[in-house]
Amino acid sequence: MSTVIYEKKDGIGYITLNRPEELNAMNDEMLAELDAVLPQAEMDLDVKVVVFRGAGKDFCVGQDLTGVNTYEVLSEPGEHLTIKKRMEAERRRNRRWEYIFNLAKPTIAQVHGYCLGTGCYLAMVCDITIAAEDAQFGDPLLRMGLLPHMPLWLYLVGIKKTRELLYTGCYIDGIEAEKIGLINRAVPGDELEDEVNNLASGIALMHCDALAPVKDAINSVMEARGLGAAWRFTNNMQLVMQQRTMLPDEFNFFKARDKKGLKAAIDERDAPFKKFCEER
Amino acid sequence: MKYKNVLLKFEGKIATITLNRPEKLNAINDEMLRELMKALEKTRNHYESLVVVIKGEGDSFSVGQDLSGEGTNEIMPPNPRNKAYLYDMFTQSQKNQSIWQYIFEFPKITVAQVHGYCLGMGLDLAMACRAIICTDDAIFGDPSVRMGIASPNPLWTFRVGLKKSKELLLTGRYIDGKEAQRIGLVMKAVPAAELDQVMAVELDAFSRSVGIGGWDQMTDFWCSWMAIMELAGLGAARHMTASVNVLSSIQRPGRSLIERGGFDFYKTRDEQGLKAAIEKRDAPFRKYFPQPKLKKR
Image (cartoon, rainbow over all chains, first blue to last red; front, side, top):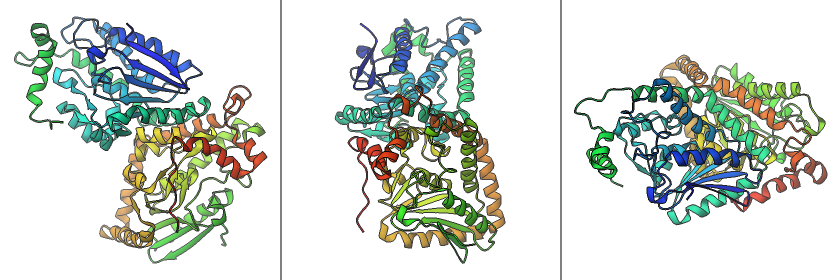
């Protein structure tokens, strides 16, 4: 079965992440299929606007942390890779986000359930994000000793909120996400699909030669605001972070996973923070 | 000097500039913009004035650029059907940027008092002011995308953030004063009956707040703010949006919006009149983006 489904209907392109039993965790296969489908959606003249969504209960839980078929998604700290190899992989990851951000047509993320880590990054690089009120947003990378590496955090929610969310790794729901500017709107879960389709249908009335420059004008302002350099900075810091030596008594997510399994490792990762993060 | 399209009044520490083409909903044409600039220049040199209010006569603040095609050679991109030279388009776009920059960097406290429609260039004008205070049923929006034009206004993402900027500019959706307050576009949205009173209080506060450290200190703050905005990329953003604005205005055979079956605003206007063209432009979208309505007075 395909991990990414691409469909078209009435001028709208739908890209559905399709690993529902793994909460749409991103693995190498999914990224390869995304890479194949994105240029297709960009060039498709019948498609005015692209909707990203997730099959099953969640939008996307983030990178697949199993360590199986995840070379492209995540360089694990323990892996012995040359600097060049790591840099190549990092640059590829970065190019993917920049490419979606600059896709020459509008993009909408339709978010429900978990929207974490790289899943959250995907929703952030889309032009417009509409989410269910009870969707969960968060970037817990730091809890695993990895660097959260999406510069758009700062532009969307500001310095203070970015620090709070990234230092703690706490999750927020759709309503809170709307309040701080991470998304455009949170709606009740059963209205989400209608809301997105309505928005996309309205945009689809527009001509592609009108939409492309309007999007580009806004993106060029972001470029002027330093986003171009920010992609590179965070990317480089991410590379540096992968080279660090773990302290002997530090929680090592990857060791815990290999010893006790993925679920236990995630529980162990999140447990100490539970009392600091408001339960939602 | 005698103004035709704006009114200028000095009263204590407050200067009031009123856009005065009420029969055209204060649509901005070349002459109005020239007079607005002259009135601002006069206010700049009027030392008693610390606060400048910009508002609209009649039913609206401003419905945006005058789209009639008459007396608008300077503010509108050259009509694409006349096959304008790129040089003309770039210099026109740059010149307009310098006007908005002048207003944005105006060294006195500028406040836009908005009621009724505040669209397109009218919104560009209001956004260039330091604060907007409006009625809760005022209507804000930039429908440029519906005519195939990318807004040259670089302030959007600074004012309402990236996600909201894209939502509003890619749909051309109109929002009311309440929503404008919620997303941070305006400082305050109040019931129409209270607007004058709220304005009086706020303007008094603005003109007094500069008294604490003195006007010289306020000017010092203003210099720092402008430097911060330039460092945050506003200067480069101005040039980039100007370029993309030109790009969107170029219409070449077989390569662009109108020639590929997009809505031809200019042709519709010339054949059926301005009102019909605006109606044709907006009608298809109402189903998806319900338009807020002005309250009856």
